[in-house]
Image (cartoon, rainbow, N blue to C red; front, side, top):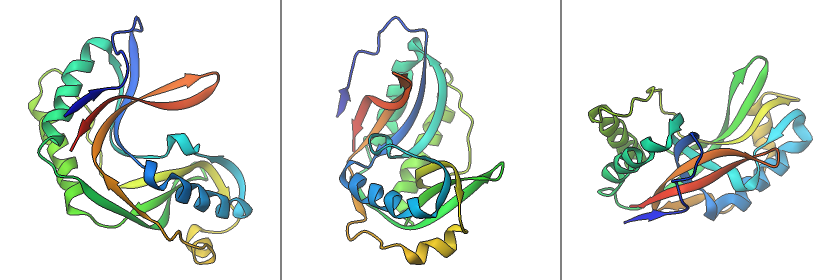
Length: 194
């Protein structure tokens, strides 16, 4: 079942969007991990609690006229997948220009990869929307442009892992990335229930 979140027929010419999974059930736990990392952080920015999510596919700038085909791709990919559970169980990092993107990694989950594969296949079948396919490493970004006092593998054993680290995935969300009052926000504009 699909759900419109807000009017997508606004007068704006472009939207910067991505497809993801919400992490509402574990945002407090993810925030706790961020707080535990703060003493080991020299520089960087932690992702705001409201923006924590798992990205399935970054889309980028699209025209309003492309929203409907994008919603149809999401619906076709997600409606035959049953709800499933994800467990985050480790920390990792990507390094860019001597700064790190810090993330929590997801335990291997075949249903998540099936959903991702269906999404990629549906994009390939669609002639109107072209996206750049990238390698899929499921993770939840918790900090950007970070400079830590030690490698993440040395810091991780010093952290207390949350007791609740599993989230039920029940929908796929199309998010708009938007600056509001100089703050980056990820706003849901469409949801497809699993």
